[in-house]
Image 1 (cartoon, rainbow, N blue to C red):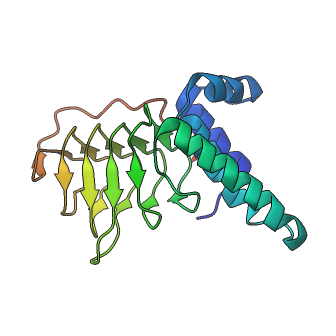
Image 2 (tube, one colour):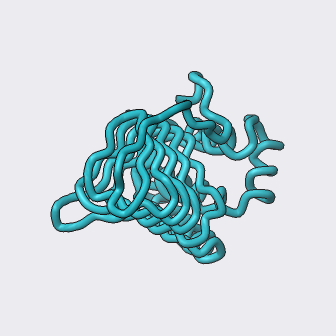
Length: 190
């Protein structure tokens, strides 16, 4: 599904502040440093759809800005990453995501997370997934809708929907209650 730049940014702002609008955008920009690389990633992707005469200079400037935002937050998310609306990076530092990874709607990724591909394939993260601090997701893995990956978990196999996964190697634990997300997206922004 394709989304407009405005809708993607509105959903990302909502995940940071719980509101939408220019004030909420300013708050996300100045208060949450991990919002900046997500915004510049969306901006780079929007520049690809500009008329050809504007595309080159605009994309070059946006990519430079994205590189600077990434370096300031000490994270590695490529501008070409396929991420649905409402991507929330918490604390940002040390996050590394493979460029071919597919990320769904309303996903939360915490500090120190590595999401990478191997020769066997790349990860697919479905909607409403929370990946906690220092977790590692490697290879052709699908994280099911609503899954929670615990801190320090190493995931190399598919994770069922609505499950909690912890440990190295990752194992599924029974879920006693649904996780509390950070400003989950309302239906109008999905």
